Image (cartoon, rainbow, N blue to C red; front, side, top):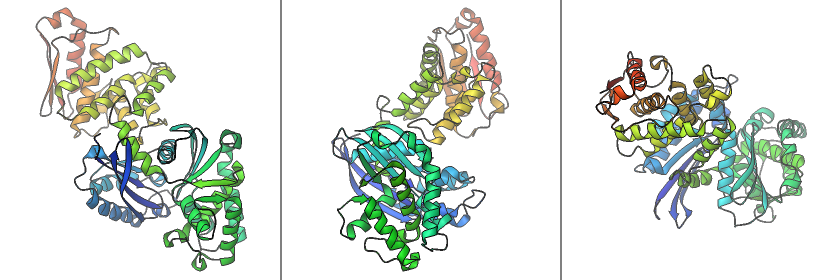
Length: 492
């Protein structure tokens, strides 16, 4: 990444959508532009956890405006991430498909722990260098993330389904700010957050930071009232809660520093933050400048190279946890990636990296049972929290792991995705060539693509020298019948 490169992060939060554009200079990202729109998508979830058409349209309209500003940005320099509302929404694929088309870039739904990791990166990158042990609290619209960390390393991450929009909708739905409503909201928040006590107790951190909208809004109000800039205290929270109850209704709240878009959700935000203060024994909290979107920008830098990509480290951790045969995984990866490099178009390096990860994880399900281990492996990847990965990325790896053996025609995949089809062909061919669990003789073996046909060919005499491998390649050719793709084996 060269100095002067522009990077962009789109944060699709439950309350607001945000666009952060930064310029990479000398190892840091300097803000160029920041756009925020209150979309309040989280309030558009019905009892069946489906987003209303109105909530989706508000999101699409906002993304269209962001898209105009992002026109011309290379895909590798933009990342859009969605959080709790779209984690919950049963009809999220409908929103994501159209939203990605409108924005011009894919939208990644990230898990709660991954959101927490990115939040910590954003906070840590904008703080002075220090060895202090930090607690970071991020109260969003429908989730609250807690992180313990030191310098740039998060040591514990957690996400809880409690937030300013959700709690305002549930406990302050009519706008009434009564003592009974605050009491009920705080008790309910503590019930959800109670399991955090074992990990996030006061002895584990030295300084508490609040990031994102709720902490920033409360910090602005307390500063405007004469408090120290950027500091939230327990006494300040009590004062603010008393002010809200005296107003009795959100329509009558008049506080310097309170922005209009925060007024409808201030009751839920204050009640959740008071619950966090009480549970974790916090007396003072500093308002952090960094948040999820800054973490996404710095993560874009890390993803540029395999050696700095956290996902590579995560794959290694999964291999170790599930007892994968590392030597065999390495063999399969090397052969698959070599074949992919021959047939893939220029600029496919990121797809090759994902193929490498899938090859290294193709036997991850063996720890559960060898029978149907490819299905177990796909299930693990679809249901694990893996640092650095979006939900869609894990599903993609799961599809490759599921499809590396068995009947190709039964796979429920998007066959119009030529890159996925090539990854799958390379992985299956590699598994066949490495069947003896020793380095295969691949000299003279080539793979090419002609339209919807893959052609694997060998040097003269190879088929006679390796009859079992030749048999498996012919079987693989037959396995692609009755799919939109053809695999031709030219064995000599």
